[in-house]
Image (cartoon, rainbow, N blue to C red; front, side, top):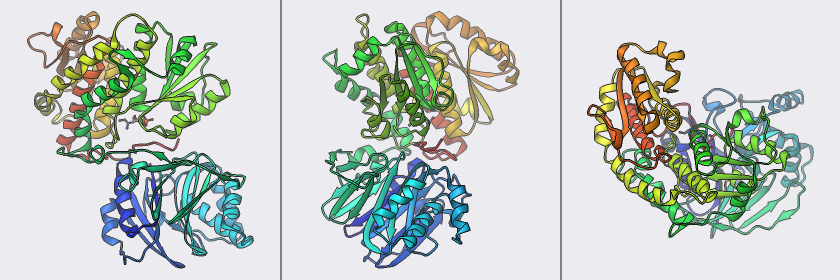
Length: 595
Ligand code: AGP
């Protein structure tokens, strides 16, 4: 979703802002803007489309010492220059960039208009900056006091960064349930919604908690609680190697991230297992052992990893597990067992639907843990404890390495609850098998060209764990190739979906379980008989001569670690075939921080 950044100090503020915005492009956006301040003057640059358009229009004169920038993913008001951030207050005294949603913006806008305050855009953001300006005129007290007054009026999820004519070398930053953190290097402070926007400048980060406000100058950072008292925080040192954020030799981040999966798996094993002995947080393990059920909550790809997690917990640890879509859970909390423990799975650790679920869970006073890829993310900090995925930054909007990392961590958790089996050993082998599957890139590309060239839809079929994977396969294909794609339990075909099959409809069959192989093959025969073009993805021990893609045999509960790579490649090459924007697909955002 929207990315926000502010810089005060240093000797290249304009450049730092543009570079920071570029680093946040992966989050998804449709316009971008920058405001630079020199004394009491704001210079505003706003453009539709990519940051390069903005870069061409920004004029730096090298004297800038402070500025703010924004990539906008439209929520309130269409994609237009006048809705693009930064926004100035009606009197021109303040400039703001904002991320999130102000729920009571209509009421506030009306109230302000009743007092004669004019509006220039359709955004909820303009309500914030006009409210601040209005309060400041009413009581020209300290800006801090003004912001606190505004904060008490604003409802919703938001973070913002503000510059004021009255204080030319100060940035104000306020966080309320939307990500915002501060970076520091000698002579400059940065504030942004995403660590990656600042990672090239510093390793020292201060995390703001909800309701906190920071006042930043080039050499000073003050953080205040909502009651106005000062908070003293220690910075955290976080190093993001530049190789983690560069594309390297790959044409797209998605392709790079697909290829990184064996490495990520090995890093997870090195963090959570010592010579085969598991070393996950004992507090989490104890809570899981004592619980009478595990409740997994997640969205999108993370939800699909949760479906595999359910099978792992139930089969390896004999622990009853349910998986919930976060946006459903937060509104209709289901009937739960007496002593549940909650696992939130979120690559970004910032997903709004999960944060709402967390609010519900906290009312239940039961243990809640987050499995996330982002250290210091909101969900990591608000849960009782967090397990990191160690996948490195995932830049492509379509999640790949985080998915297999989530399954790996879930497998290790499940194994930690049981003395039977040895998934650690099995996962060690998976790293090598993944490399074998990665080597199938060319045959998979050829298969995609054969099956999907003129396709307008596609289906994945599977049973059990292969059905869970089919859902992820279809999501990947939809997201980046824009093909209508569905994953079905293959046994359900005859109960409706088979009506969609016509001549040349592409159907992929995922067959990794001996117990269901014959049945799924029979279902594929049924669609073939109705004209479908089929392709099979099978394990080597039960391959047949005309199977299309044959994968190394592995533990039956870990097959998604291999089939995932195949379906990620399929989606990637389908997107290449269609000429879509692989890393930044239309309408999507990497981190979904609004409901
Ligand atoms: C995955 O390819 C998607 N971009 C999306 O479904 C994503 O998994 C979902 O929005 C959940 O995000 P999270 O893991 O950061 O919470």
